[in-house]
Length: 450
Image (cartoon, rainbow, N blue to C red; front, side, top):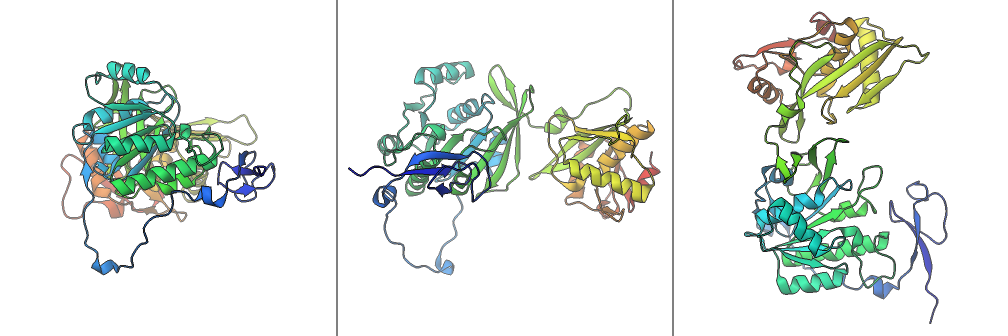
């Protein structure tokens, strides 16, 4: 017999190398090459052949809506774009113990009547899943479970059971017999996922995959996994917090960057219908350095509290520390404040925190961050019933943000009385009852409000 050829595969990008090196030549990652056995061309392509496709014009095709099934969980439906799509493949990743298996077991119990489910456990025994179902109060739901890690045997059982939903927990434990490498390697992940994707498209079965994450928070394995599936969800949580956030970073059947909020309880995950209420701190008296802003996560406006602390620095280089926003963005805002507002903070430490463990990724929070910093620096509160949003330009102008009226309506719904916004975001055709809207053209006008 011919001696099997050894290759080294990068677990970050999937690039191959004939020998081990410290740094991947393709993606530049360090210490990511893993040893694996090369396969023959015939073995590697097994299962890929299919019927030849005919040429078609797009104008001849009939448009059809995706067949969706509601999960019974409004927050999950929001993130998925309306529900589970037949034939769609969804990959969900998160830290160990965050509640991925708990969420999917609750989802399976609610959707079982509409979509008969096959739950494949690669890490746990069926007895462990039964104990979790008892804890969640769904043990009487007739869910079909299978303890298996071979993808060929899984699909053979699925061909007999014909489920409408196939859950794989987790994809890192699944292997294919066509490859000799260990489960969890780059080649095994790629080939096993490819077979499951082809099965989903051929049979119209919806597939949910649970994926492990690395210490950086990204889904473990080659990035090609996220390109192969239809939807990628990240399950996030603040350290020690009881709230969980499901974020969509890719969705072929809906809007990306949607957000679902859950609270972890003894009986499982509970939906949070109004997340703005949990991220706001209602202080008895106005607090310095605290400003409420409104961001948009997908299609949902959400109120958040931005806190700032400015203190005299004993260091030669004052610190600029941010939690929940880009640190470089804060440095730019402080430069705008000095250049166009005349307020210098060369000898001050500046700390900015977004309350609740949320992360702000849009520029609509620029004005709120700057006013929170000024409020702490001057020891002057802005007011607990005031909302602030707006983008700042390098010329000192206050630029409008998208969906300004929706943000103002969200503020009025939560009892806010005043809103400081860009001039172009002021309501033109109607007034919002109970809300005084102050429009700003320049950043210097915001200094007078304090």
